[in-house]
Length: 290
Image (cartoon, rainbow, N blue to C red):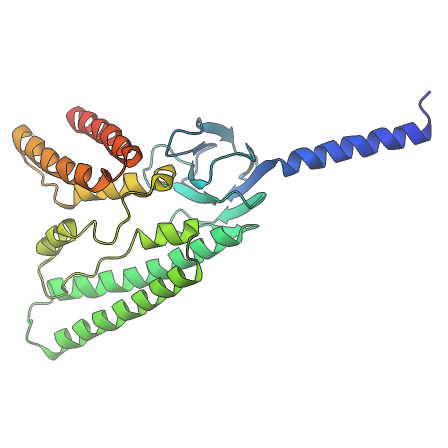
């Protein structure tokens, strides 16, 4: 018969081992309270350093995921509806946080994080900047459709655009300064909102946005390959001046022009150059399938 002392020692060892293992892992807990969520979720990386991990939600729409402590820092994605492009939650893994928790209450909102200061700061900034961008889009739409450009109200709206733009950039620069060097700062710095000429026609604004898409963007940081940033920017760049009704030859010409710009931007080192080469091959195959 095992003595009480031995039982206590065994219980202590089991507890110690469990605690040790939990500290050796990164635990992600999530609650997905959105009607667009499927019963399953997929956790994926962007650099291919980690194979996709699939799981099923519990009855209360929650899940728990345990990752090795050695998981490479970066920004990872939990996709909760494979049929919808924008149904996901991006999570910063910085090598410091042992546990990250979040709740998503709507597919239109950003997740609310706990247990990770960097994810909380990033999410809060995205919520605020999205609100600012939404105001600007409404003002731009007003200017696009208002029939009398000489009316006083047009000048008032142009001034409002300038004011809202200043508020945005004040917040943008404050976030950069306060979080310099963090993953959150890298994601924010390399995804600025572009303020085009509010009096220009919308179609022309899209072309200008395409021309200046890469201004201020760091395209030679190998660490950013392990985030959605580069692939998102490349996808956007190809979409900005896409035109319906193009012939196959015209689509091919446009692709080659855009691809040449990409290779110029990403060829500062072999790692980012290799990434761009591989991703452009994927995009070419995708375009041919479409």
